[in-house]
Image (spheres, rainbow, N blue to C red):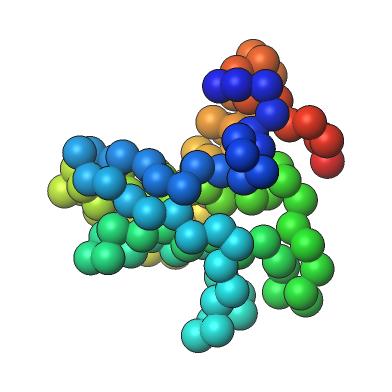
Length: 118
């Protein structure tokens, strides 16, 4: 990945292909229906929504936003593969751990750099 993740002023891409499906990324997205969500994968609409604020309305750290993006992409991979093994509370926690691990590998190996690490 390129130096800094803010291509054209965006921290994450506007679109991503997952399993041959083109998803639109909505970021920043304000969840009105539930304030405890940081991200959401919507296979029916082919959308990924990610908020830029935490549950108190404060701006989220770049690293947390990137981890949420990875997390939602993993949901897309899981859904499109037909497995759907992460559709439970335990699966959600496992997926969060995987997203954090992938983020760490990308950062530690210099494949992803944030201009202002937090």
